[in-house]
Image (cartoon, rainbow, N blue to C red; front, side, top):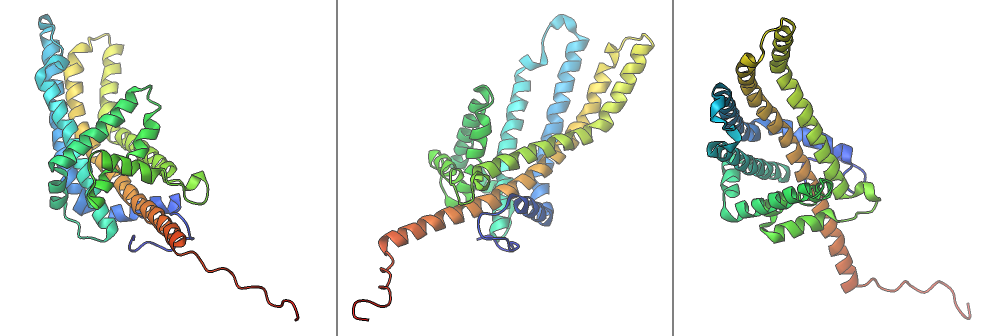
Length: 301
């Protein structure tokens, strides 16, 4: 059951209402959920960006070394750490959103501790491996696989299922077909929700990076028009993108918080309707309705 949900027509939650409620809940719980996740991600993202710029600058200053920064083990170590932190932090954000939607107390320390359990981490690695594997298969399969597996964090946090059980449960819920046609399918709604999230993250990224890219391009065109060498300015331009990476991480996390609330709302709505319809069918099969009474009148009347 989803508390404080505005009344809506019988049936699955309309997609527009889903977007509105996700925004309302994200604004209500923004400070509690956002800061414990956004700040660590932004700090690590800025550190990774600074290390990348440092390696590229060092390579450009010493061309005889012929060492690309991407061949450095430290580069791959920092990239791996950042990817793992994103995976863990976003799952903690989803756990917190689930608690907020269900009406339970929201405690991000509990969400972090839950996410750092071994069985949760293994399930997350399995989930990401399947998703990335589908991305490498001509990219198109990920458009179906990612929505199908979108309920994996919710299944772990709310139902205590992990590993392949969590994956199969997420697929089962997303394949539910409620009355009303394909537009009411949770799979379609998750796809649209993820599309909206990706679009918002892209637009937010553009907005926060434009102030740092415009001076770079202006300086580049001036140097080129004056016939000056622009290679020497590459280092300063790249360092200018480090604060942009910090702001981009903050903006992306805010968008993902919104998506997490949408996933949580859709998870509870889909499970409630699917399990409710299954229970109703089982009750009707176990306790069939009595036969209708005979029509009034008969022989001799």
